Length: 77
Image 1 (tube, rainbow, N blue to C red):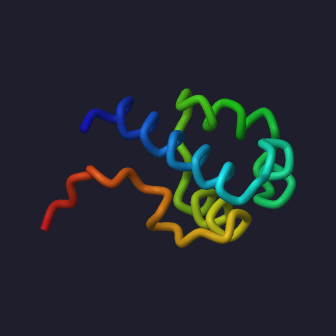
Image 2 (image 1 turned 180 degrees about the vertical axis):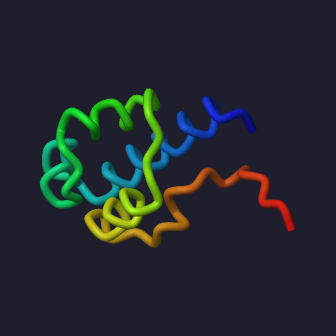
């Protein structure tokens, strides 16, 4: 999976987790500590989430962090 596709896939998972948690983007920003401008860029897949940000999003949405990763991601063994 290319870096761009991965970034877009993670953003889609974050949007889905946010919707499942019944949060707005602004609420997710406040709960996760990610600024609204940075979250907007990440939300649309323009920039990547860091591991720390994904953990903050997971905590804010009540999801396990692994749920924010695309299901079809290839993991090297």
